[in-house]
Length: 189
Image 1 (cartoon, rainbow, N blue to C red):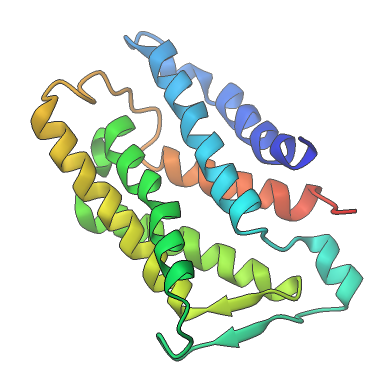
Image 2 (cartoon, one colour):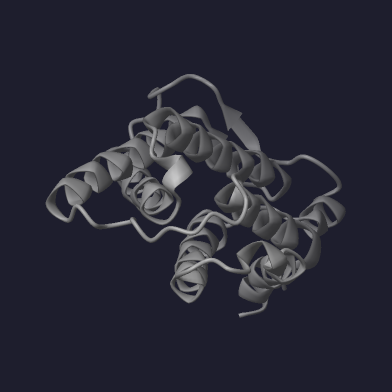
């Protein structure tokens, strides 16, 4: 629960500071609910599934201690690759569903790549493995989620029509403000 609060509270503060950008817009409550669904997903991907490193890990271990694998698919872990794809599919689905300006595959793929890269870099600080395969499969999962959204949107044409844009990089802000919150505020036992 503590790590969840470290992710959510900085984002809630950002929303309060920027609440004036919501004034006069319809569907604000719906948008806020979806942003918290998005943040919950991001928290689960970043902290529960990936167990990102923190500033406290740097202090505890005295610097970078992780292992880096840069050769793609040299380690045969099919189950891990499939799970990484599945883990990032909601990101690719939620981005275009909630935010109109994330309805281009390249934008969505870049967000997936950057989120995955941030997770992998943070894992250098906590005796975890930083792996190029994770970057590839997480980005592939984001793209797969985007393709599922395309299919969903063709079936349910009105999906996402009531999107509210508070800031053009709003979802990216939620991802990285939350990750910084965990990195700087969360101290594991």
